[in-house]
Length: 259
View 1 (cartoon, helix red, strand yellow):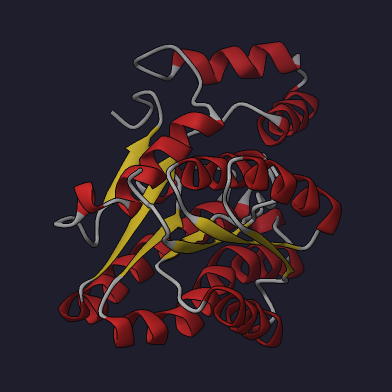
View 2 (view 1 turned 30 degrees about the vertical axis):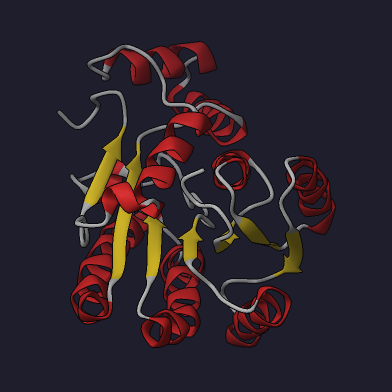
C-alpha cells in the first residue's frame, strides 16, 4: 500500500470528493482525521474506514475558525502522534450566474473565508509539524476556475486563484524541509453540488437543468463529467512517493475543459 501507516487530515471530509478522497487514502493504508462541520456523515465515513482496517478520528471543525482548526490539529497529534498528509477539500460555491456588481459583500467574504482562509489555517497549523519531521504532503483543492476567467462567478474564481498562488508560495517555503505542496484542480464534478449548480443556472437562464448539464459536457474534450473518484485518484498520486519530485504544481482533472 502506497500510504501504509501514514496519518492524514482531510477537511471537507463529510461528503462528495472529500469523502471519496478519505476512502482512497484509507484504502492505501492511511489513518485519518476526518474534519467537517457535519458530524453524522463523518461518523458514517469513519465506520467505513474502520472496515478497511484503518483508524479514523472524527473531528468537528469549522475551517474558518482558528481555534477550531488548532483543536483539529492537536487532537490528530494526540491520537496518532504525527501528521504526514493534509488535504484541504473544504469549500463553498458562492453566488452563481451573478454579475460582479450584484455580488453582496457578505457573499464575497463568505466564499473567501471558506475557500481561502479555510485552506490557510490548516496549513498554518499543520506545517510546523511537517517541517520538524522533515516530511509531508499537502494537497489543496483549487479548481479549473483558478486557471482562466469564469464569468458570473467572481467570488469563487477569485478564491481559487488565490488558493493556487498560496500553494505555490508555501511550496517554496516548505521545499527545503522535504514537504511537497500541490493543488488538484477539478472541473465540474458529478454529484449533489453539480446538480444544484445546474438547477440554479437553469432557473436564472430560463433553461432546463438538463440543458445546463449538456453545456458543461460539450465544453469538455472527453465529453464526460469528472467524478469524485477521478479527483481522489489525483490526490492519492500527489500524496504518494510517486510524486516525490513534484511541488508547487496544479494537477488539472477536468476532462479537457481547460484545453
